[in-house]
Length: 309
Image 1: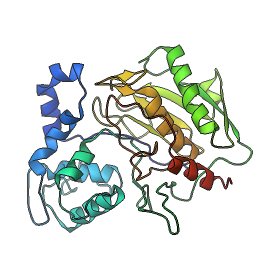
Image 2: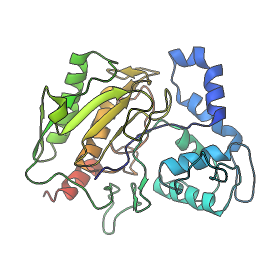
Image 3: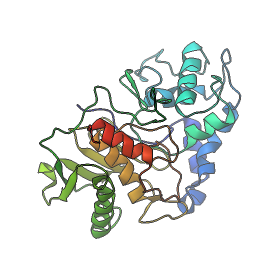
Image 4: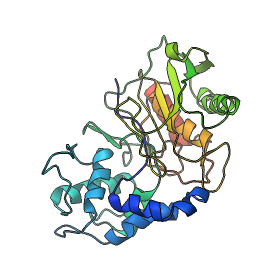
């Protein structure tokens, strides 16, 4: 099953204008504050208002599954700035998933969360399954799966991975070492083993760095938003956005490669997002953060998906 992948970014005209103005700063710093700026003018917006810029919120919520997909090249596609019933409902769903105050209003905390870089896998896939559930009956778990719970069959307990020839962003040896470490973290808590292969074309899992439209119907958006995405089993594709500033450790203004890799590998194995902010499978992450240790919710999720004790 080829589910939509994991990504992080907003694409409003105001956002792009701000990025042009801040270009000299953004070269040195990829700060969370810069991502939040375009949304400040929308703080407090509520149903019944028409405010310039609301269409960008609608596009964001559409991208991550909270609103139906529209063809934005057609008139009347939903690219308007009217705060209607459907937008209020979508915001409430978003707030519920992220354990925010459920008001349907674009309060500061909701806008702050939306402005953070994130994984590109939608929170609601095909309108059928919510990636972050507000708790499962009888437990405090907040992990989730893709629709229909796709997973690797019992015959595929050893998965091979290889590196595609996309854009070289970090050294090949560094990337190999980082990914080996990221795979080992999942191997320690599951019945999977992972083996690198030199032939990426025949590998179960295919890793690479790409820019913009790269052929998987999930184009990257340039620096500052969608960091990476991966697909549910048995698709096996895992792509980083080459336009981001990447680092091999926690560096202010850059994103740690291993932190993102551990999250995306969870998707490759069949996990959706978690609403636990400390979990690896939480969708958002800030620059300068190293987050590589699996949380109890991540471990419970993978073991539940594969019926492990």
